[in-house]
Image (cartoon, rainbow, N blue to C red; front, side, top):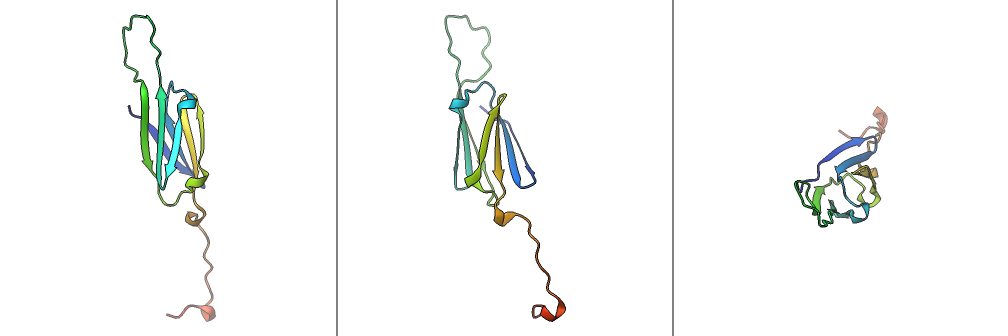
Length: 112
């Protein structure tokens, strides 16, 4: 089944929101290897003796991979789950942040 997601950058963090309605938070697994982020989760429905009239909601284990850019600090990912939405916050790596470059004066200028 498909895990809809939104992603955006705000200041020095990259955020992802992944819809996982009806998932037990204990079943959510977030891993990162190199620049590949994998999210997997499980949704169960313990059926009893009831007569099922409609069964459209998928159950089972779901997984999705996201490929992250080199500019993110994958060692510092934070994750939270609230109201069926998994939120990941991934800091931008220090080496990828904008920095000011000093400009030397003409007598210190680099050779042309």
